[in-house]
Image (cartoon, one colour):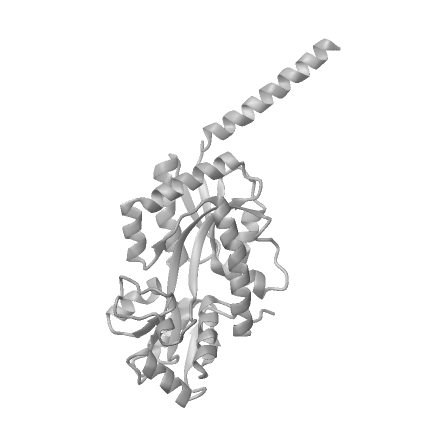
Length: 322
């Protein structure tokens, strides 16, 4: 009996030691970073920059895998169901983790229980841009024209409940005017119709329309965050004309729930180190993004607060998903 007990104890110690070694040795193979939006968009650009920086710090490739659809819900479900071994990460966004839980009646995941927050990575502004035919050169003129011509302006978005839709409806609510919403199956389609003159207005992620603004193909009138962007210092925050206006998008790294805390801590430290590096700061700034960075506990509290904030914004927008 003693021999059996001794053998069982030895095996238990060996298994514990093996598990500890596996965590200590992590990572021993490539890590995948899931992104719920198409290549080339603001989320994808940020993800690829951060993936490269993490690869350099963790000693293994961090490979971005795009699975676009349903505002990031498809990829979030996949991440929630992945093995919690540190080899699957998700680039979460304000759309998937704050808007969608308030927009969809049911989701195949719970943002507060199915994920282990790692770090908030960046804030991304939207830009209010108009077709050159719109007779307004600044926000005050635009608000006056909007109010004098109810229903004449059409604004496009990447779909019902998207940040662009919510940005437009918050603008309607605070300005007292009325633009009509046209939902597209992706922001790029809306931008194309803006260029063609079928739309007059769009609230697009800065990185996606920056070159169009610089080439005078569209006119930038305002930014949705409360601070100006160094890339377009002459473009004022919408809040300067409409007090209380703010739409601040964000992204951040999470892992499946039950991922070992030691691994979460290591990824967090690598992420913070990357976000503080002049190289990554400069690259994110080129995209109009503002580097963030915090602890897993702080990121969890941030997600909780964002769920409350975006609930109110979704209510104002009147957005719904069938």
